[in-house]
Image: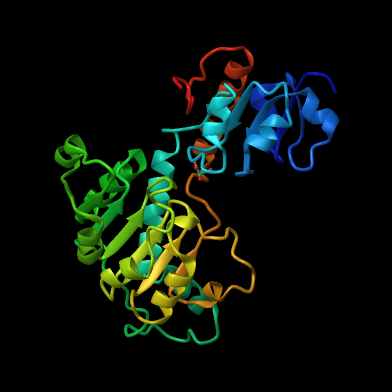
Length: 315
Ligand code: DGY
């Protein structure tokens, strides 16, 4: 095969459909020395670690294009030092990720998954109004941690559920406060006042391990934690302890730490947890747009143009 050599983790056919036959895509994992030497671009599809040593092993590397908005698996600083542009896919996945946030809130609060298992099993013999009584979402209080684009989309949806909406963010967002009628709180106050706490923040040094035993104990005993951010934002053992010790009522996790959890992890046994395999942006239209942005960034980087959505464009 001829074409510019790009290292990538296994990609769906959509990449080729959008990129044509311009690229010679070779496996990123265990790439041969010859492949690394020939490489001009890296496409990070399913969160491979791309650190300085990976970059240095590809002397001709011109661009790293990430399929997704979160770039915590890429050492952006190392790329910037090496003048390698890094692209991501912001914006196009806000709605689908917010949809999934609401899906988890509703699933956990209204026992959708437990109910599904029950309805398929032999115990379901007649309608019983006394079983699986959940928490009412409408009119309850939602605390959103991370009021970026995705957090704002969650707030828009929560308004339709007539929820009181609190938020916590590194910096206050006065415009969002007036546009969406959301109230700023310290993390502690947000945790204490919310019926549902939704994590929609990026994984950074300051959000790693942000939700631990103390934060969980600050939540209401009836509180429900939703993690749509990244697994390491929540301390896994602390979450397990809180869920089994009645410190909080339940959790909905689109992400975990580690991800995936080992198949025998005790968290997987709990009925008061709904776990999704990182589906935040997994909708047909969003996946199409993410891939288009990934390809656009890749091509721009190879042609020496600023990336349309570059993480380190101006650095
Ligand atoms: C994101 O956009 O960061 C999602 O986690 C998918 O990679």
